[in-house]
Length: 428
Image (cartoon, rainbow, N blue to C red; front, side):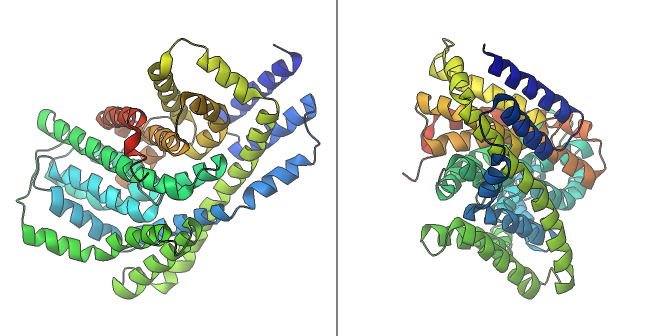
């Protein structure tokens, strides 16, 4: 190990310490990159300004604040409730039907919001009280909302797929398509886990409603505007009418028009508050992306990703063992890092490994995002746990404990996604 390697390792350890004590991630990445540049001398100091600016001067990133705003509009209006009623009408007749309706409500909502936390909060507010009335423990009801919210970044349109596409130069449109059946598989696995919990434990309840075709059709008609959003967004993208970035603007206009003029679930005076809230979230994410690209650039010049990839592949694990090792790494990282940060920091290391293993970039992206999604319901940084705790009043660790069946189900689904490329690449 060279002296430069020792310096970089020392700086990396200091960065980890600062993250642990709560220093904002963009500051840690920016100062860490500056320290490496100064200590190792790989670049001129001017790159600290040039690379972050270039990273943010990206057409695709314009979609980020727009999809965040879309999620806020829907969660504040009536579309979310209509989608939940559709979920209840289609799966409410099965054992654990109300729990499954929560998951399906999250699935349908994900097709318009692209955000996991908005998914959890919006559906949780609607579904946790009736689940408790039906006999579900409040902590398990909150866990279902948190687990279903994970679908928010898998089912297109997805904010995280946009970030992944920008960071790795992968087609965002292809990633959206890759997330379609992956999201269906994850939703099915969560529904099966809920069925088993309601059938064999005291957490859930064997509730069920009689299936009525007329009610299902009425619910589908009431939810037509919510179901129309992903049709408009994805239809426009793949017919060539607009790009994924322009689709984000179309999504805002569509949802705003529907909520104000058709469902009347939103009033004009609420819009400024939604803009401020969405803007503040975008303002938090933007600097993280900018300085993480700088950090990745410095690591790339030092050839650390290639060397780490060679080291990881030196273990005699074979293809299966290496993929499972990557999955385990993502599960651990997801417990401690926010998903955007995890993608930006790990991709320079893992992309060379994926290339040598023969992964298609879209398949690998879907696999990684699905694996990191599980971190939303694992402490200590599980964002969905905190969102569910906020809307239910249940301590987040109690929700985390009740989430373990969902975690197991999602891990098994991600293993299938990793080893069956056709699920992510069905469109090719």
